[in-house]
Amino acid sequence: MHVSSNGPDSIPPPTGLDTMTRAVVHATRYSEWLFSLIEGFVGARVLEVGAGSGNLTRHLAAKAEVTALDLSHDALLVLARRLGTANIETVAADICDPAISRQLAERGFDTIVSSNVIEHIENDAAAIGNMCDIVTPTRGRIILIVPAHAVLFGSLDRAAGHYRRYSRAGLSSLIRNAGLEIIEARYVNLLGAFAWYVNGSILKTSNLNASSVNIQARLFDRFAVPVLRRSESVFSPPFGQSLLMVGQAS
Image (cartoon, rainbow, N blue to C red; front, top):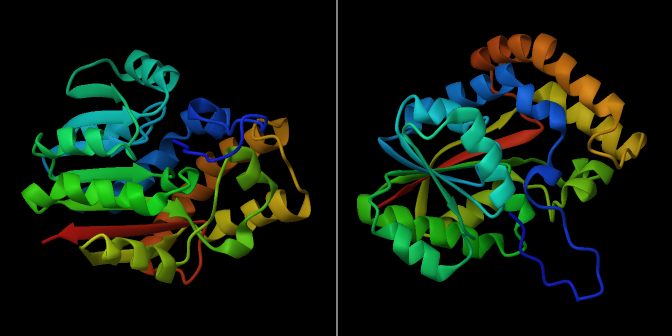
């Protein structure tokens, strides 16, 4: 999802499937790992904001009733083809639209999950505020996974249409300003942070689907994720490619 104030002559930012490396669709170990980190916070009625092609949706739908929301019709079509419609509803909409948030607030969602989405939204505070409005009636939770550390921002972020990467303090401020209490905050994927820096800031790779990037993604999922999953279950790293944060409505 991406809301931009660029002028009419500017190149439109990438959206939907164009914001991700193709190999990510097959990164089953990585999506399983992410789900294992958030599973304990997931309730019975889930709104997934920025569901994309459904990597995380698959796991959410095994546990809960899921509404998969995305700005991209094409991404949702891919999701539906991959996963079917059992326990999954798809909605093409913009989380920054107040009318959409008012409609969704009446649906009784107790959990919102949004993985690698709000960095694509220029007004991220509005997006988080709308999410808060949706879960406030149920005193539910918002689970966010975002790219971490501004120092890692490089050519891959620009290619993906990222406005920013987040610090723990910055994201905490956004969540608290929306009226939520933070109940979990941790960095994830120490090794991925170094790989992202090398590709985006040293090699300055600007093609998300360069063969080197896709090969690395496949090798990372097959070999690195099992090691990281075990090691980061024992200790929480002080630095990582991603930041996981959970906010609780009161």
